[in-house]
Image (cartoon, rainbow, N blue to C red; front, side):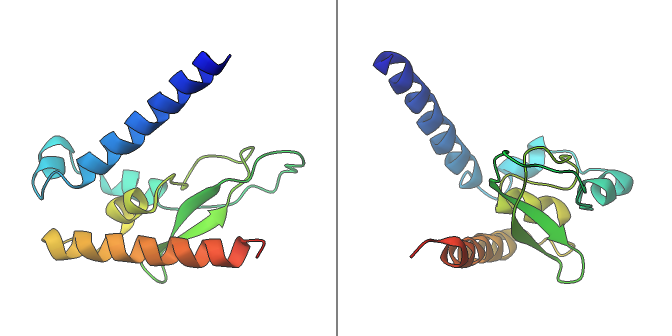
Length: 129
């Protein structure tokens, strides 16, 4: 059983490290591989409408949704039984897909700083201390 747990933990760590390396790879690495989404696709992907279903007994992990009024992404405690439309697992991904003003390294640095600050605020608000 411990071997299974260690292998799962190792896979998780590899995924986290690989994700961080992708984000720090450079300004052109992601732009070359990703095709820009269509306007309708972005509009659908970045519009969040919460379901009105009863989710008693479900997990409520932190996810990110885009707010058009502020042109930023905000953390929410998202019930796993709701629809996945307009919900992102990571702040950076939400900001990259949905924000309107996208320009170079300064823009990526702004996203990184915004996501860290917002995540810290979310954890402070929802911590038990």
